[in-house]
Length: 426
Ligand code: GLU
Image 1 (cartoon, protein in one colour):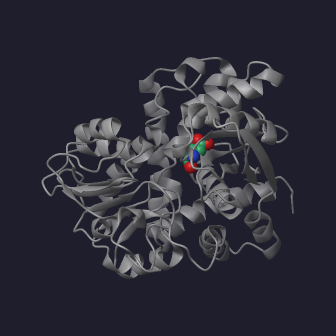
Image 2: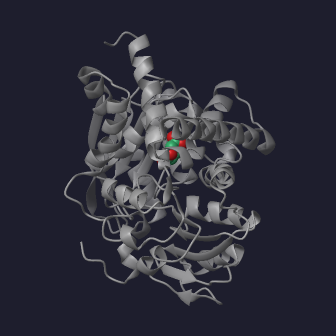
């Protein structure tokens, strides 16, 4: 695909195969190394259950619009299905399948008692009013209600959804099931949400980077970092990296990108984004396109938004020493190979961004006991989980001489496969 030098180029690249097939390339590699038999591979590759729903919504202009919604339950061998809900124009069935399967491997790798799922509604939430989003969310909740449940399938936020969306889901679900805070995670704290959940994916990213920085000998202090996608995950990662003494030299969001080789004041960038809706135009910075940002001399490049933004078209230009996948599936398999050949370390999504689901599990546990933990306890547990998973992955990297991604998939897939055997599915 041709790459144009505009802000829109950070969109996922269209490739010949689906995102789901791409994730399964990573899965198949792990299955091969684990020597799983064909039946087990097939069982682990395919989603267990998929629901597609039609969602009529009365828009503010009085007209009815019908949206497509999905919930894919990829694998529930290790516990209730778990995964976010994405509101995005590209959230089609194959994308949701891919993201659901990543949740299965992520929960396995991080070792929390959940399976993997994902939901999606094909819509553009940025063009919808709060009332329209509220009505759409209630319709969607009713649509997927037969297959979700506090002990069956627990949604959470993802791209385009947030704590408010979760509050609407909880309310819609509670109308027929009674007060059920445990039906979703990532809720507002007042409704049983966990403190620290909003920051968790970004915080977990930085916890992994602290560990990796030591092993790779690339200190975070003074490191040049670029964050592609200054949203919920990227902005927290940038803030916490700033605290580690890193220099955030470039940031992009949907409205454009900004660059300052001496470092961007992340707090000011956040305020500017709050004010204007984008980081573009931030004082004391130069304009930068996503293409230019990808090619900067960096220690760490952090894609933190949509998938497939690193592809065969731009991977050859990447000069960062480390790619930190705060987004889900930001790197296509071809690009992954290119980066590997160039000697660039890729810290994979299922490890890096697992902080969200880790604190989701803590939130769910608090809900089951009607408890509310303090931030220090939540962050301590998060640190323990992220450090533990990183250490296991690093061990496999060293033992087997594989990449971090291969190691992460080996651990994640291996854990799910062994439970499938123990449960006697096959
Ligand atoms: N959407 C987040 C993810 O991709 C969090 C999922 C969850 O907390 O269930 O990991």
